[in-house]
Image (cartoon, rainbow, N blue to C red; front, side):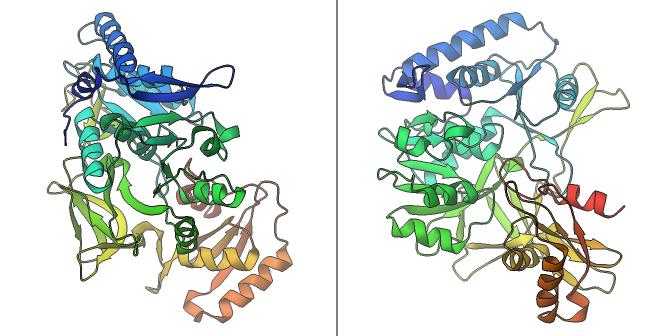
Length: 452
C-alpha cells in the first residue's frame, strides 16, 4: 500500500488514472464525474499560478470558506502544493478572525504550505491548528491500514471540510487510495444526498447518521458507516447493524490530523484499536495522551514581542507554539484500556466538574439523564456558586420546557442523587445552547454568561 509524504506526491501518483476522483452535481442537477487525471491537472495548474504569484517572504496564507465544490477542492490542494498556507473555515467564523489569522500566519513556504484548522472549541475558545500535508497524508495512510477503501468505492462528503474529520475522512482518504469523493449538495440535501450519490462509505457525526436513519435515506449500497467527532449511542450502532451496515467508530482530534484509534471488532465498536504509529497512553489521572506521526506543528499565536517565528516566519508577527510535553499531546479525554489493549473512552476531563468539597460530576451523564426527563437535548450542567447548576435552552422549532416542568425534572433527578451531587440552580435561555458545527456543546460559551 502506497504511503504518500506530500499532496504533490499523492496527485502525481494518481495523475494517470481515468477513474472518478470527484462526483458532484452540476447546475442542472445531474451527477458529473471528474477523473483523477483531470483533477490532478487542475490542481497542478493552480499550484503553478500560486507559486509564480507569491513573492519570496511575501504573504503566505489565505482563508478559504469551504463549500463542497470541485473548485474549492482544487483551490485547497493547489494552493498548498504551490506553497501558500490555507486557513480552512466554515461560514460561521467571523471575518475579523479570518483576517487576523491570515495576517498572523507565517510567510510563503519553500515547499508545501500548511493547513490551519480551527479547533471545535468545546471547552475553550477555538485555536488555529497548524497541520501539514505530511501529517494529513500520514493520517490517511493510518486510516487505510485500519479500514480500507479503493476503486469502486464512493465516499459521501457532507461533513464540513473545514473540520479535520471531514477533510481527512470524507475527502483526502478516498483521494489517496482511489475511491471517488461525492461532494454533497449543501445543507438542504444533507439527509438525502445518500439517495442521490449512493455511497458505499459514509463518514458522519452521530446526529447526522441518526437523522438519515430516521428519515429512511440510508441507501442500499451503503456498506460502511464511519462515525466520529462525538460519542455514538449504542442504540444507533444497533440500528445501523440491523440494516447490514458495518459500523466503525473513530477517535481523533484536530491536533492529531484526525483519527488515532478506530473500531476493529465490529461486535464491540466502542472498543478502539490504536492506528499504526499512534502511541496512546492513559495517564495516572485517567487522561489520554498520544504521540503520533500525524501530530500538528502547534497552535498559531500572535507574537507580541515581534521576535522571530520559531517555525520560520520572516515577519516576526506570529509564531506556531507547540503544547506538547515530552513529545506527547494531552487530549483532555478520559479513557482506559481493556484486557485486549483496546481503548475505551469515558468522557472529557474538562467535562468533569470538581466542586469545592471535592465532589466530581461528569457532565455528559447528568445531561443525558436531564435531557430524557425534559425531552429536549438543550441542557447543560455547569458549576455555579460551588454547586451543580442546570442550563436549559430552547430547541429550534420546539417550545421550551416551562419553569414548572424543569423544577419537576430536577426534583426527580435530585431524588436519585446524594445531596452533594444534586442540582442547586436552574437557568433558562430562549435560544439553543451554543454548539460546534459537529454538534458538540461549546461548554465554555455556556459557562461564561451563566457564571457572571
